[in-house]
Image (cartoon, rainbow, N blue to C red; front, side):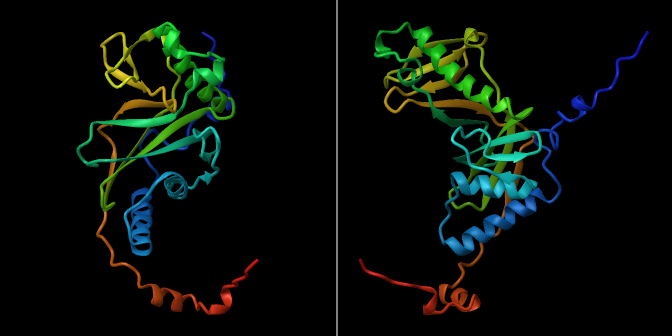
Length: 245
């Protein structure tokens, strides 16, 4: 039997590391950033672009914020979107991720979603998401989402990632909830997966937390004294220019 040839293009499609097997020193680098943030910022806040930048640094990737929001972190043939949620990092089994604003009125030109067939509306909402994913996958062979679950004081975080995928609209059914939001369910097991809010068009996806997530816990640092820090960097009033117009 003739053997199939090994192709270089196939080898190049491999991601930089297996899913959720983060590079060496990843946890230490994240912990270092958390300690620095708490010491200098004085409050436990970590959102959006700051988390993207920290994650990119920890895996040796480039941070390139984009309008799509699915490829803000890039390394070779792989891109990541980054999300943060609050909760108990060591105990959460499910997270609800804000995944963009999907507006059928804007994307399809429909004038009144209330008059649409519910399954047709749900299909359009998923297809908007699918188109967003497809546009990024044209540039990257591998597409992932990395999630940071953070405690209120930011001394404990859980990190995991999953493949960012398209969803086949034929596998889901939809119904309105009591708050007037549209919910999507898996036909196979009736699991609630999607929520769409008509006012604002916010689209959310529920994702299971894998068992092999990375848990990082840090010792809270003492806040850096502002005067000492300014002295350390040799700050003088000449650094500041004040004008009036």
